[in-house]
Image 1 (cartoon, helix red, strand yellow):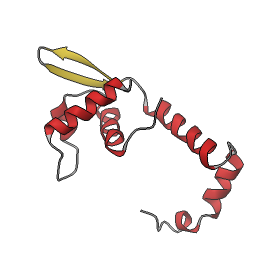
Image 2 (image 1 turned 180 degrees about the horizontal axis):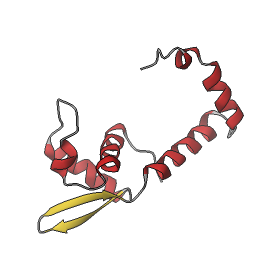
Image 3 (image 1 turned 90 degrees about the horizontal axis):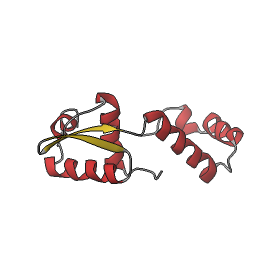
Length: 109
């Protein structure tokens, strides 16, 4: 599994929420200014090539659905963060969150 780009993750978050949908359904919850239909379609096809999404065909239309769960991806990302930034130490991760003033004061964005 590879990490998702910001745009890919945004679309996956929507697919995890709606469970399945056509490109037009993915566009509905996206904030303004909404990306072009073709942009979303391209990103969904990239997600399919990466193994995150599959589809069911209805003629020329495709209904997309996630094949990697949100929990699976969350576990992958947290393990990657632990290995890359905290020497695989949960204690170091916990200490970071406990001691980081920006996180504790909710001044992050």
